Image (tube, rainbow, N blue to C red):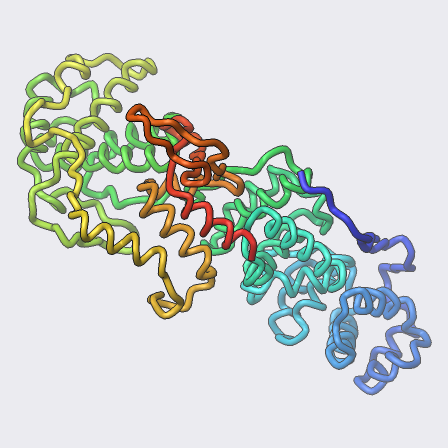
Length: 489
């Protein structure tokens, strides 16, 4: 854990009890609110409106909002108080939202008034919620928001993230987390809060939640980073052409299965497509208990002849057409289809949902034929071609990049050198951590009597993955050279 240094501003919550918040307007207050001139004049000479103005002006001072905006928004709030005949701290969230809609430039300040004085609307219902950092800055104070954003950014930079663009990417999510938590202090953030924010509908913001968890873990606020993948909710597919009884069993399986979300969604799609096949070829079969050995044989035969796009379900947004539509399915896809239905049937029986008239392991086993045979199909690259790739990775320049992306050239070159010298898969590259490369400190004596001098090689430590163990790979010392250049920036 990286220890933090420096002096931080302490957040002091807004205290309503420090103010006289009456529920009824006095006669003097009603008179002072009666005209626009009187309401505007009250900003400099509060007079009988002091109890109404003090909390509004204190919140405005905390927010860091410009005087020009304050002179527009506070009179607008006073005008609405005059129109409704009740103080603003009695308004409902709908009233605050309406006021936000009417005053575009003052929305953050109005949100701050609502947060501290009235029922605060959901942060996701605020107008123009693509800029939640503006709302959070006004609610909790710009200085404090900037301080916490800097703490997050510094923590990520210490973990190896590039400083450039970090604040832009983190600020929106930090604003949402602060408003959802009703407390802006990073020390108050919890894992549960991160999971709730992960459901935010903006894909870019949801992706950033995992990164924030790494920063919070390095600061000792949460125990460990949260692995946040597959944050999208289920994309329901049209099921009108499938027997509803079959759809119900498919959904029940999806809600019960403990597979990882992506695997579960993939297999759910397969068993729904099986229901589409049943509706076309065997409409009398509506439930797993209706299946017989003959239906199993018919299903496997159909998968063996199936073409890409033949049983497409589509989504609510429409049908997606593959570039391979009409071509035979690949063996891996055929085997995956059969496996999904077999697992569904096995789970159906094992979970006590019913009895089957056949053995799924036997009658829905994957045929050992070329049509279903799974395997790798490696591409052989000639040595001269590969040497060109190695040379290109060692001599990568800015003008070689296809676009002006925000990743630094040194990082891209380090990744390219690791790939050309270590041959790692994409998921293995993604798991690498800072400090994963150890230099060769001693000479190595080979069986043929030759010696590999110290410093010729380095050892690349690849962390364990979901289905693979951690391993160490000896690679050229050039790998460490370019990784060190990147980390030194």
